[in-house]
Length: 167
Image (cartoon, rainbow, N blue to C red):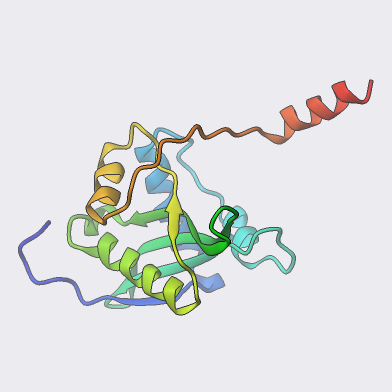
């Protein structure tokens, strides 16, 4: 973390005009994680602003001197064992030029405040095991690593499963 004075940041919900900068931030994340490096603006537009969405994806922006320097993409989730809701943080990304200046922590803190103000009780996320900087960052925030097996299946496999069970 830098020893200079913290950046003056404001936080706000994303608007459609923020889609290009969100796409840029997500492209930076994709490159860092070794994924396809280009994030389609239309994908973001649909996820955040389509009139009909299955998930109410939201984006909170960190802004410094009128420039978006970070984004948290999240949605409300529900935990069955505790009968509580909170946020599932999909991605938290800080522009490469603003990292290690407290932006990520400030953005997470702003998200935490908003969550509690809305009656949420927790924030959960997944991070790639190989993403050591992210894992260290989340631990510094006081998050607890939970030992779970995370499974995922895509639509082609789902369709194949359905097709094989209907034969």
